[in-house]
Structures are given as C-alpha cells and as structure tokens.
Image 1 (cartoon, rainbow, N blue to C red):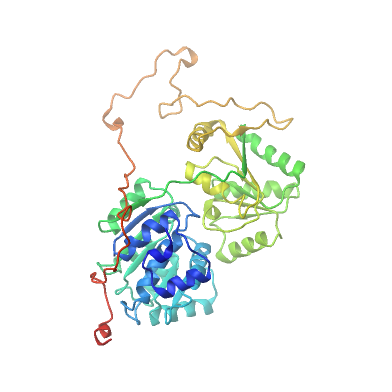
Image 2 (image 1 turned 90 degrees about the vertical axis):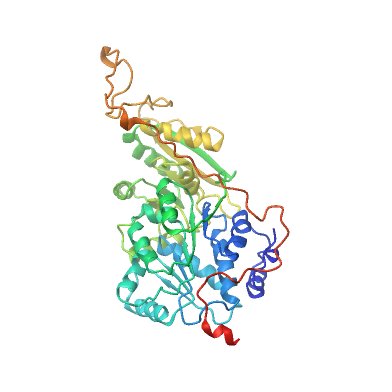
Length: 453
C-alpha cells in the first residue's frame, strides 16, 4: 500500500515525498489506519520493520490537523536507551519538516546542566512530542517540570527491552500521570508473559498486530563452533590472529562477561572496547563514537546495542553466548550484512546451550554450519540435545547404576500452564476500500479555542 492511500495530512505526505518514501512496510500498513482511528495498539515487530514511522506518521498527522492544544504536551514516546531516543528524534525532525509550530524535545540522561535546562524549558512550555528515557523523565516529573495531564498519545517503543532493563516501575509511575482517555501504543519485538501483563494494565481494548520475525539476510554467512566454555576465549584468539578482523561486534550475555572478554582481547593486543549499562552515558557515547569512526576495531557488548543502532559496515558478529531466543539471534546477527554488504556471523555454542541453538536452527529452517575447533583446543562436545534434568542437575537416566529417579511426591506444582501466543485477527483494512474520512469525534483533550476557528 502507498502512503498517499492512508489519509495522512498533506504536510506529512510532502515530507515523505521529499524522503522518497512511497510504499508502506507491513507494520506501517496495519498500524497507521488503526492509530488514526483512535485505537490502542499492541504491535509485535522486530527492529528494521519501520515501526518508528508506524506510530510517528499518524500521530504527527493528527497533531497537524489542529485537534490538540498548543500549550500542552500531546505525545510521550518512551525509549529504553538514549541511542534509540536520538534516532526517534531524528525521524521526528524529518517527518514533521512541513508541519508549522510543531515542537519536540528529546529527554535522556548523560548530559550536562545546560542540556537539562533545555529539556526543562521544553517540558514546561508544552512541546508537542516528548521522546524520553524512563529515568530522565521521572527526574523531570519529580522536579515538577512536566505536566502530563493533557497527554493524548503514550508510546512505548521496544517495551520488552525496557522491562529487561528494569524500567517496569518507572513506566507504571509515568502512566499514572496520564489522563484516562490517553491513546496508548506499545511496540515489542517479542510477546512474553510480562509484556502481555503490561498491555493489560495500560491499554484499553487494544488492536493486536503482529509481523512475523523475518529470517536473517541471505548475505550473512552463519557458522557455529560447538565447544566447552573454557575453549571460547581460545576460539576468539584464533579468529583474531588468523584473520586480523576489524569492524566486529562480540555479544556477551552479561556485563561481567563482556568485561572479561574485552580484557582478554586487549591482552593479545586487539584494539577493543566494551559497551554495557554499567558505563555512564558519556562513556557509552564515547565508546560508540570511537567504534563508528574506526578508532577501535572490536566492540564487545551486551544486548544494549543489539537493537536500534544503525552501523552499516559491520563485517562480523560473534555470539560469545547463545541468545535466549530466536528473535534475539536475528537481531544480533542483523547488525552485519547491511547496506548491500556481505557479512559473517559466528556463534560459540557450549554444551548446555546446544538445545537453545537447536531451537534457533528450527526457527531458521536450516542447520547452521558447524566449524571445526582450532588445533590445540581439545575435543568438542557432541552436538545433540542434553537429556532432561529433574531440576536438581541430575539426569533422568541410569547414572551410576541407578535404575530409577525418585520423583517429588507433591505434583500439584507440576501442572503445565499453557502460555499460548495471542492470535492476531485479520486487520480491518484487508480487502477494504480506503476510508473517505477520519473520525475526529473521539473523546480526546482538545483546545478549547478550537470552537472559535
């Protein structure tokens, strides 16, 4: 579908025309009409599907129609990281280029006092759109800088990542400041139980839209080393010494592991740096700048940079640990083979992670090539799923002559709970003629001066 079929405002369409955006992505085609019609939205879509435009375009179009007060904050967009907030703010500037008198403020930590004062001024004057990280916005709310009583749109971008980073209480605190009729839009790459619970708490009869996770780009050459944990650093040393790799991201499962990997690589004179949430915002900005400009060759990071960061020339991604789910695997390796470049992705799979990696292969629909360990590292574990355990680390087989494993007599806690993913009903716009008019008679907070226009 083309954007000019979606009844966006002329100013928004002019901006899209200048940017040479003509055709909607699937998430945009499904979300934009529902947001224009005033529905709450739960969107499940991975990074790179165009979800930023899926909520910004209809919100800006409605604001452009003049239905909302000039002296109030009309939209709050929550972002898990400063980096994503900056990207949303950049998209906002482009999409709103032809809209007169629309204002926005990006609110995030890691700045000096001058930046904080600028944020305060924008909040107090009632910028139309506030793009914020949770902690920084909470700081302004506690200082009395932000009046959220007339907000009409509340957007949670990458909600699953915000919950993973511990922002659940902050989100609920911010939500309590919003009016009851506020339209809420939530996007998440995955739909675990905690996201479903958050949606039930914040959204009113939402339309659920799910875009299937796409498979990795064909240009990504994937491989895996099946190994023991104590062989992983040896594999890294081999890879870097043999190939003289540059423009590489190594993903670790924890801040401590990222630090250890960086220290080990520096000991063998690899020009590397680390990125995780223990760093201050200024340190993270400095590290990202050095990596983007080639001052360091290898970035070792937690999943904080797996989503929402656009670096086009990554030659290789290395998963030091197997991601927890298939979506995270796709997000990680999707950092390479961008902008028509080739790329390579390697995963180090220890014995206990084999079952998780088999699930990833099942999602991909093919087996990832298993690579031979470098000489001198010893034997690799066999690539097969481990037998189930009884919860105490003991295998359910005849170890040491035992023929039976005693079971817990209490079985009441062992009932399986079906946790089925919600089925998305067909969207209303399928096989449907374009609407002639948008419904502007929703119960929204509007400028009283509108009656005189």
